[in-house]
Length: 359
Ligand SMILES: C[S@@+](CC[C@H](N)C(=O)[O-])C[C@H]1O[C@@H](n2cnc3c(N)ncnc32)[C@H](O)[C@@H]1O
Image 1 (cartoon, helix red, strand yellow):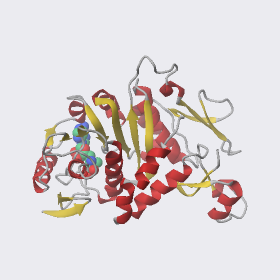
Image 2 (spheres, protein in one colour):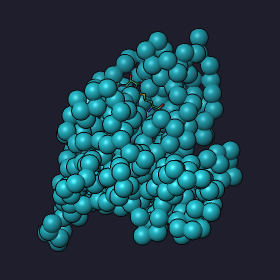
Image 3 (tube, rainbow, N blue to C red):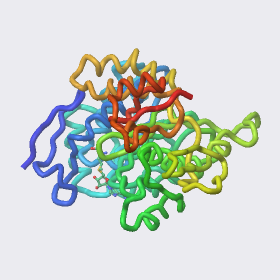
């Protein structure tokens, strides 16, 4: 049995057991709507002046994300799916998923090129302007291929749901973190920021190109990063911005002291190697809020706008946020708004009772 749901501008046929990865013919998770909405907003902003775009979605499942790119990217740009200057390639290892993608592409009258097989194969088959990695668990094992498949000035989007490993709480976290080239996670109050930095760190260590995170976030059960890539040119400074941005978190759980540094500081617990550079590009997020974000503001998804607004506020704060619980350990805890006023801090989207101190 299957049913049709609506999300964004598309109608998608989903199997009735779509939220059960193993049993269903193609996986569909309604909770990832926010992730997909954000991806559409970012892509529309990123490609607003491009004449032609090639998109790769190698973990397509029902095809909802690929079809949304095909349909929703055209509304604010010069791109047209039929006159071919917008090409969308959707892959999945399961034939039942590919059948679903093809049915759904027909249902929405968009042209999608499908591929049944391993993501690494599709990623390296040609060069793309946007690669969206949205696998089960970690995207780490697909990053090498994605970097090979990404054009200069391309956009890499990646979701990770292996939060137990990235937060250092998986029973075999050390083994799981081998996928992140052996980087170490750490248990701490600011663990979701560390998780994002670990994923960005892996991407940076594998890439030789200049990279700029445009938007990084943690919500629900996953983290998501959007990274713009340039190319190494003779004018790229040495050490490259990438090399300068790889380092460690230093943390003393007793004193609460924390910092980012190029090399691990003695007397502290460490996480890393990881990304110690900026997590966000404030002007880009401002554009999302003013331009494409405004579309979502009129729609139902207030959570998307709230996340973007909070990130816009916290962009300039100190790395490694704190929490009310931490700042008032053993004392009566005031309201978040009072703490923000006292410390001239902002909120952080990473944690409800979290505060980001002024840089
Ligand atoms: C989390 S789902 C993707 C959800 C989809 N991107 C969305 O937004 O609804 C992951 C998909 O990856 C597929 N998959 C798992 N391993 C794969 C591999 N090595 N290569 C390609 N597809 C794979 C699964 O069959 C599943 O459909």
